[in-house]
Image (cartoon, helix red, strand yellow):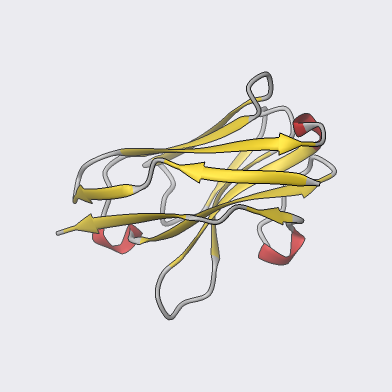
Amino acid sequence: QVRLVESGGGLVQAGGSLRLTCAASGQAFGNYAMGWFRQAPGKEREFVAIINWSGGSTYYSDSVKGRFTISRDNAKNTVDLQMNSLKPEDTAVYYCGARRGGTYRVSVSSYDYWGQGTQVTVSS
């Protein structure tokens, strides 16, 4: 069992930055691939950025590539998402997900545990 708690969301103007943090507790954090996903009103949850168990491999959606950076600290059991050059279309609830096995996948259904989400709102 893994418990995930996201923080760092808020309201920011277009062009601004936010840093989200997901804190994990429970079973060995290093055994899990981690991902950030988001869900806007009326839309399905979509992947944003994912990272493998060691942090040595990452993958981003085309919509955030070059603007967002995912990282993890296995000693602190955290995974961060640094978001720069934010756009109004980035507005959504952002969720942290954990996937057993250490290798990442982009599909929502591949993830075993989820946090409660944190709201990010980007004003134009």
